[in-house]
Length: 281
Length: 106
Image 1 (spheres, rainbow over the protein chains, first blue to last red):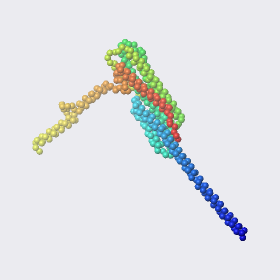
Image 2: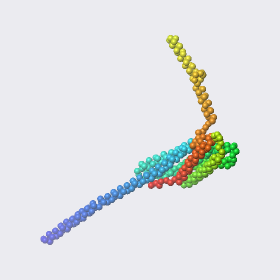
Image 3: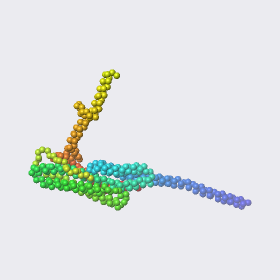
Image 4: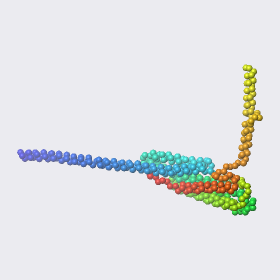
């Protein structure tokens, strides 16, 4: 009897314990899982926020760089357009053609800047920033091409002014010669002025004829190299023209100094207008 | 219609006719000048002016027929000013040939 009771108690106890242990174990597992999830979720949320902030910052940085480049180019193109409008020796049609080209560049860049500033996703922004690089190929040609044309225009303008001055100097030299003064040196200097001015104008025209037909390379490296070579050659022509003008100016100074040493003539000096037509590009 | 009224109407018609003849140039009135005469005088004045054109000096140069010391000095100064501008143009050519774009982020 006691054994049966004992046995009965043992079995009951085993059954109870068998049910209790898993329940206790399950309860412990449940409590540990509930404690681990909030930390993980917080960590994941923080990581997502950091990634989003970094992406936003990267987009803003890219937009700022793009704006900087576009603003820089627009400023130099506006300056160029002002210079083009001040050109004196080219035809109005040529001036208008240059100006239209420059204005088109400015309009395109302005629209691109607005688009970039409104971009909110990286893919679109990348595409638009690539467009800056593509348009740079045109800018890289239009800017020096127009600057060379403006410089050539200035050379021809100065040559025209010095031709007018030369005619007046001729009048003064002739008057001095008529008064019996030896004007050999002055005449030689004036002849050199004429020679230098002729070459200066020729160099300026050569610079323009070399660069005017050039077209954008659109990424073609061979063409890009050829364009650069032509532009540099034209720059060399402008430098030669500048040296000619400087030499002519020195001759003018020699003549003016020589005239100052002559005895003063009575009455006002007048000259006739130069008979040769002013040079143009 | 009374005769006075008829006279007035007739007078108005005559005045109108004379005015039309004057306006069309058929009649030259001694008082004032006709439009044709004014036009002829203006044309003569213009022709006279054009016979000796005086081109306005540009870029700070003195008058085209002024070869005095002052005129020559003014011309030399004007040329020097343009030479400064040419120096600036040459610098701009160099800058454009050596242009470097801002490095882009993407």
